[in-house]
Length: 395
Image 1 (cartoon, helix red, strand yellow):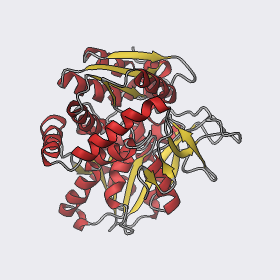
Image 2 (cartoon, rainbow, N blue to C red; image 1 turned 135 degrees about the vertical axis):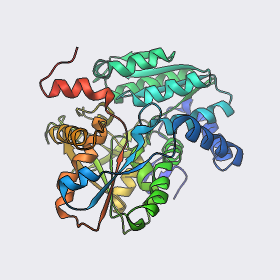
Image 3 (cartoon, one colour; image 1 turned 45 degrees about the horizontal axis):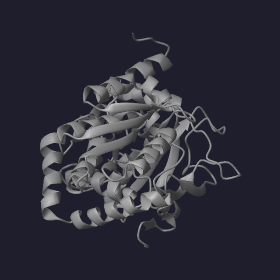
Image 4 (cartoon, helix red, strand yellow; image 1 turned 90 degrees about the horizontal axis):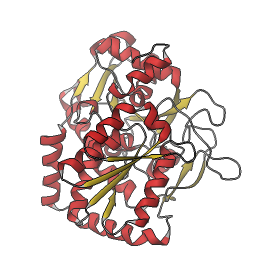
């Protein structure tokens, strides 16, 4: 494939002022991505600070609930800061250090990437700003407080829908004005090259560990691999090492929101006729109207409330590498409660979308088959929002 491209997707569609910093970032990543000293430092912080490797947990009660294939959960929720986002944040901050950057910025939706970025900035003594939509700040107050506690300035974004798309746009604008001393840690496998590749590489530790861990479980085979998809970093990390393994059916689960009407969901890849376009520096599938304008999207999950997807996912869709489906809000809420009751594990509402697909998948599985679901994060941040959706109020 051409540099920075996944088939026809990807690229660098950015203002001219940003190109020098992308060129600098690409050169630095190419220099260090195979450097033994850099990789050893990344592994050290993954293992000693973040808490890798994470468990591949046999969900015995959930398996009995469905009475079909064995279900395993890849427990990214057990990581420091509570989600897979710390993998990418650590990798990028260690790269930024080598590039001599003094300030870190990021965008965040559900707040997990913001907290991860604030955490690594505190760890390495770097100034940090996180841009967050005003609506997301309201529904993720706990994570906003955590970021401020860690010494990060949380910048509210009130333009557009006041959600993740607008926070990303504002972060890019700030970055363009401060490119000399600032590194932008994009939180998902989106954006201009080299970000989708770089984020995928740091998150691919998820799939690598699954591949090794399953050798000790269930005879070493996987039949189904499931992950939720917003921008798609936990999913691309889960699927990448299995991309050439046709014996494993890979399923990415998008946010079906309130229903199929325009503006009521965050579906891109699983729609009948998705259209590609340019968003945040990359050519990829988008939620857009007939005139090519990006439309407002919705999900109960702030982390899946994004109108695009990583360009490698677009390529995987076209190539048939991954099957993409959607789950609505109510189905995700039901799965949130089911895992909590059956396994004593409260999942992130994002991860609950992946778990909810088990309702549709499991009746068609066999008892000797194996299903692995990536539990991308824990649900502490979502408890108040879920309680409200269920008609309860928590002060």
